[in-house]
Length: 231
Image 1 (cartoon, helix red, strand yellow):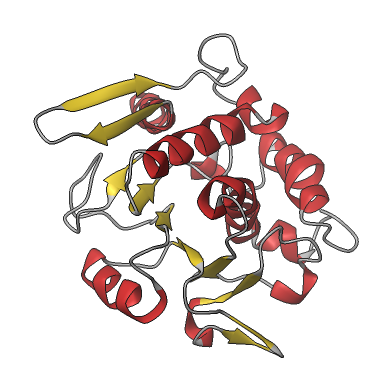
Image 2 (tube, rainbow, N blue to C red):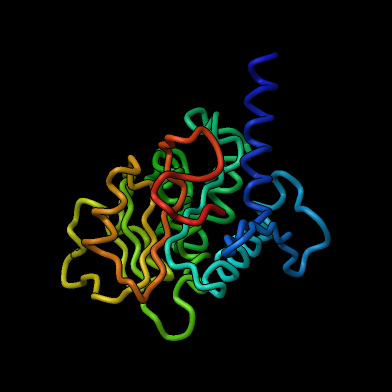
């Protein structure tokens, strides 16, 4: 019970991180609460189902970009009950079937043995990337997504971005490819020591570069050592 309580507390703390945006100013750090059409903080798990977390995340990233930040880190649990995703809890299944598979237009949807059920975190992060894309791309800018997670990309019929592929693809998939100047969302790209190289390869000084839901941290909490603004 103690270990379970600790895990739940850690999850709640991660969710709380999503609800504040830290904007670095020349002489101070300001915390701006995100209120985007909702009344107060969304319930811990309802926010996954009703789009409230997506609204909060878009607002956070949009405010960061509007303040002049280009390199941004976003980190929150990609699915409810993330610590039990291997077992497929009812909340996992509900989120996978009613939100992820539906929004990404996965053929056949979420069902036992399907790609989206077996690769729920990977598909869920593509859903979150789709939700962040309007804020990351702004007006008229292309958005490309590269993910280090296992995903059957050909089943994502509605990615909501201009390009999506695995991180190991080199920025090409079939006849499609990333373009110089794209806004970029990197899903779980790995150790922070690789971020500078990834930015040099795929990023652009004039476009947002977002590291989303990286599973590895060297700071054991909010922030990173590469200068990316944490959300």
